Length: 108
Image (cartoon, rainbow, N blue to C red):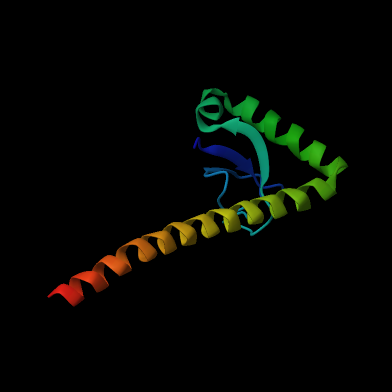
């Protein structure tokens, strides 16, 4: 999965990371806003273009504040989905391996 860029509307810092990761700023704990760019595209932008992209996105969010709340819910639900998937894989492994270990214990 590609690393995506998110920005903090409070401290204006930009962060890259897993899109399913945290939706909070590590500096000030504000909800991060996705800039809809991957890390490679972000790295190609000049400093002025980066500031312009952040300000444009912050202005859009200021006009639609409910969307930030919905984005944080989406991140939260995706993280839960990933956790459930991991638990499912672990349970499948246990269900497949445990009978084999019991069988080996009976034989020996």
